[in-house]
Length: 327
Image (tube, rainbow, N blue to C red):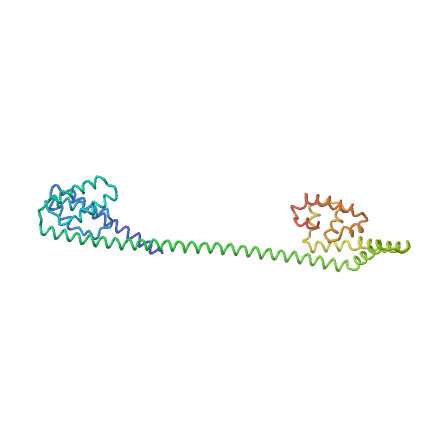
């Protein structure tokens, strides 16, 4: 692609240089038309018009050639050369040059001084003009093909770049999804470990508590039976409250990314009873079970939970966003 670009630049520079040299010849012929029209015509005949690079130079040569023929009082066999100038200046709205070309055309038609050599040279110039037209048409086809090629290359480059960007975006999304999946698996694993730890730690005691509590609320036995059940429940509850609490606290920290440690560091002045409630909530215990462990009514536990949630949301959530999952 770079070599093609350099080739185009070289072609343009060469064409410009060639046009400049031809322009000098035309300028000289322009100066000689009045003083020495035969030399001017000779110089214009020496120019190979099939090598012209642009239609403006061709139109200028055609106008000068026709003017030099008229200045030498030579009749043109056809109007083809002067018509080159007429057509060009008419198409480009050059009024002054067009009027001059039409005037020369009219005067040339009135001249009947034919010269065989001049006619032969004239016809040669017509052939060179036809060669110029063919070459120009080929160049146009090449330029159109080049433009189409460059557009196609641009589209391909753009599409490849778009695919690279989309691929990078897809890779980023895949990486993000992978990290999210790992995070979910990690959280799921933490919760599973927490559940397993608490299940092993409190399996026997909580099953006993639930059983005794249910029996207590539903029992229709004697006062002595109910009292024995109540005493047993109280004994087990007290054991859980005192002996099992440190292990529950440790299990929550192990399985919930040290959530209780973060709360203590952020709220060092948290009350012992609020911290105990937080441990039970983080362990996933029900409100009724917590009420039995803390010796308070269910309504009181609900109110305490609400107040604790507000304080933690205000002071801890910014440091430990997972704290609200406890509730």
